[in-house]
Length: 112
Image (spheres, one colour):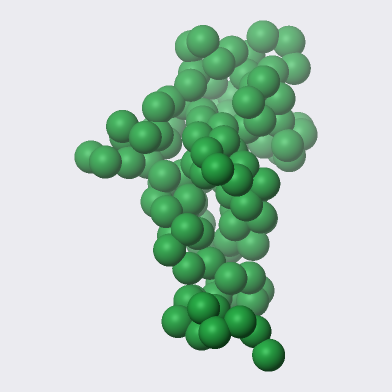
């Protein structure tokens, strides 16, 4: 039986616990504008891997998963992600997003 704290939480379509932390990750991800990126750590500073798990389990097309990259600008989803970002005009330096130009501060964007 799951812990009592999970009874009041909502679950994603694939059964992953989402809850308030997961909803915050998704809210922040949705705030990243076209042509910009943010990092897993920006979505969930205390647990970047949690942010990755939430995004991997999310099937909501309103969540721009491709705009979330690793802290060093490298891509977790390879060429597919790169094609989507390039189509939005995100600049690259070699194999990584040029974070100096393309990084969006989701902490301030999500509060709008």
